[in-house]
Amino acid sequence: MLTLLKDIALGRVDATAGQIRAAIAAVQYTHMKKGDGGKKDEEAERAKKAGAGKFSAAAPPKLVAAGGKKV
Image (cartoon, rainbow, N blue to C red):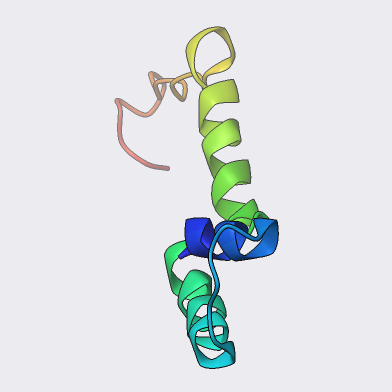
């Protein structure tokens, strides 16, 4: 649908008003905009990558004094 709209804008294809409106409506479901709901997912993915390797979380200390049981 996006290529159809580009072709219409460049004058390569003649389309009716109804076809243009249908293509615009369909593009919303086939192509996601950068700002639509992806920010948190992208940020979480970057945090996973940054928290891996050298900067990963260390294991908690063992409780030797209590014999390994919770106090």
